[in-house]
Image (cartoon, rainbow, N blue to C red):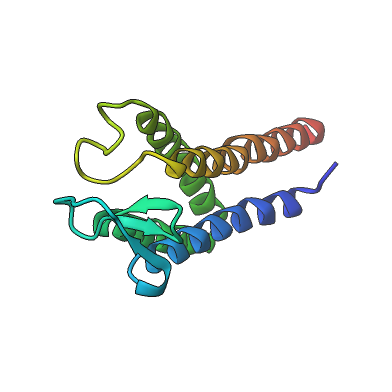
Length: 151
């Protein structure tokens, strides 16, 4: 069984790793070397593919940068990391589900959620769910059992 300190660190590092990943993806969307413009004409500014795989536009890139900075900032405290992981898990799971629905796979015209973004959102939501709900639940169970044992 892990100690509470290693669980605390893993939750914080989970937020940090998600933050770095999304910061890098967001910045990569603005770097022409990593961005492939769409072959089809589209009225959405900056629509294309990051690494030729993940559909994106300027708004999607900006969201990635903001989420990345938030994840890196959340690393500074355990409670911040737990809140980040929980909100991230809920929002990105919702994004994966919306990406599966034909009428909502562009978030109603704002940003692409279809294609490979579906599995990326689902996978990162699962990671955030683990650190935000499962690992943080272990900490609260450990602290409540230690309080009961000392009484």
